[in-house]
Length: 107
Picture 1 (cartoon, rainbow, N blue to C red):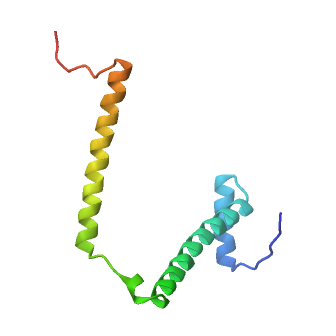
Picture 2 (picture 1 turned 90 degrees about the vertical axis):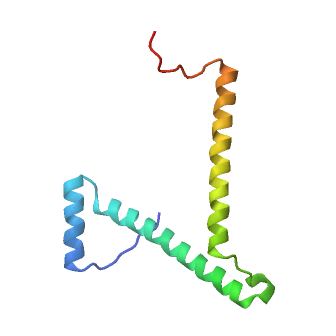
Picture 3 (picture 1 turned 135 degrees about the vertical axis):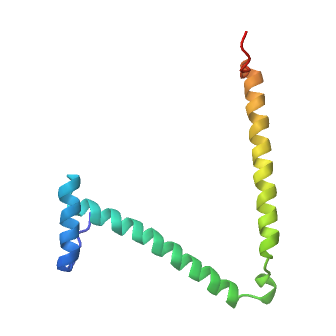
């Protein structure tokens, strides 16, 4: 495992101390966790920037866009289809296992 040394402002160090003391965890635990999360965020940002750059530098026919209203409509259709499929799968599973929800009727 690699080791990294860095300088923190007094304020950041105090805040890190506070977290460590109150949680019973080490300062290293929090620093590693924060770095891992930040790296993921930065990787996502860089990948997005690279995708945009690639799109803009590519041939014009690759720059086709889809109107937002069309995207929303397609997402709604997909969500409805997913819900319908989930209900069908649930009913199919219930019928295979021989269990069905009992009604709330009282005898």
